[in-house]
Every structure is written in C-alpha cells, then in structure tokens.
Image 1 (tube, one colour):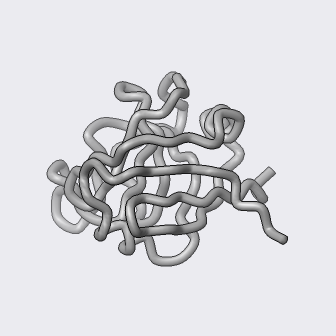
Image 2 (cartoon, rainbow, N blue to C red):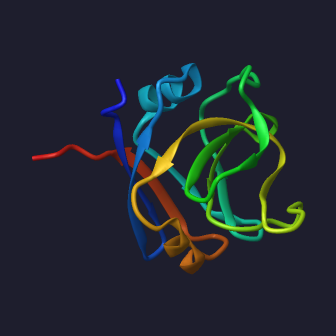
Length: 128
C-alpha cells in the first residue's frame, strides 16, 4: 500500500508525500481530504486532524528531515523539516513521541514559508 501519495498544501507551499503502511497512516488515508489551519513550532508545522490514534509501538521523539508524524496528544498531523524548540544539537525533536506516518517527497524545507494560521489541505495525489 506504499503507493498512497498525498498532496499537502500549506499556504503557498505544495508538496507531495507518501504515507507508510502503519495503522495510523491507514486511518489518516481514510479521513482524506482534510482541511485545517497551520501551527508553527520551530521548523515544524502541525495541525489537528479528525483522526484519533493511540501511540504506536514505533512512536519516537527524534525524527528525520521531511518525516511526517502523528502526534497523539493533539490528534495532530506534523511535517518536520528542521530543529524545533525541543531539539538538542542538530536533531529534529517532537514535543513528545509521534507515530511515524510517511515522508515528504523532495525538499521539506519549502514548508519554512508556511505561517501560523495558513490554510492547510491534505488530499490524495492521484497520478494521471
């Protein structure tokens, strides 16, 4: 099922991403399309989504650039592209463990242009 491509539009930024095969990603895929307003926390954007999942066995705080995570305490979809206020050294650290759900295709640093309050949409990205 790793062919589940999504399009994330956040303000003026548009990027494609791929969801992984986790149960959390399955729940998000079934809830698409999702519209929200962006929150910014360092080099992370996040926003609440209408999906409720428990922490997964592979949930973790330190993530890779471009990784997508689901933050259970806030029912939030997260896009990580650089250090956050919780980071130590050069790592990218979430506020608390997130469920890994996928990865941005290409350079996730484009999300630096997203501002708090920007409209965000996640939808399936169908290839013609």
